[in-house]
Image (cartoon, one colour):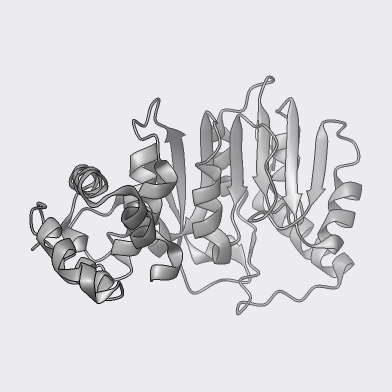
Amino acid sequence: MDCWTSSFELRKHVLDSLKELKITPSRQRGQNFLIDSNIINYQINQANIQPKDIVLEIGGGIGNLSKCIASKAKKLIIIEHDKRMISFLTNFLQDFSNVEIIQGDAVKTDFPRFTKCVSNLPYQISSPITFKILEYPFDLAILMYQREFAQRFFAKPGTKNYSRLSVMINLKAICRNLKTVKPTSFYPQPKIYSSIVAITKKDEVHLEDNEDFSAFVRMLFTNKKKTIRSILFNIMKRKEKQNILVERKVLETLQFMDRRVFTMSIEELLQLYGHMKERIGEELWLNMISPNMK
């Protein structure tokens, strides 16, 4: 059974809620609210929420999605930053005893245990939130993104959208592009299209030092159109001059030195990472991938 019976009902809820909160939505701030009941019902159906599920929602807003999740899940955990929205959600969801609302910045707040994540993410924090969600074990995430951002998930090496995000999310997860959402599904209408994406974690990622690899990929993709040689030698120039010659000799033994970063597959990046860590030495290696080396 669908949560929202019609788009008319959902639109009325949105407009009445915004009036109650005295909010005038701003396109510039990305304040767009779903008014298409078919989209929300689709998200809920794709999430396949079971009575045993603990569902995490990032940014509850005015409860468009929250109401539907709470009616199906064992527990709904909402992380909401805006105090006005928390007060509104507390009242709007008062008939549900299985809802916990946590006030905080989702990027900085530790997530409780959850089995599924269903969210229309605030687009301005899509990247850090996606990386953070991937740090936790879960069964399924159904997330809405700006379409241009979601395209990076599916980008292939050598294409313009291929990025650090492409590498790290496909290292850890399997992504499916479920649906494109038109601007007319929102109030007010944004100028962009959105995408609903399903994410499932891979069973195993054979990488003990994942944080180091992530830092390595971040370092490379800061200048993704440059060659591996150019990036590494530029870093070497920041070291003590007496060490440069030795380091260059070591680096010249590595594979892929003439490849541009954005052409490297995940497997090739892992191979380069392993060779560098093995041959350069622990202290220098950690120094190279340190964030302040950008």
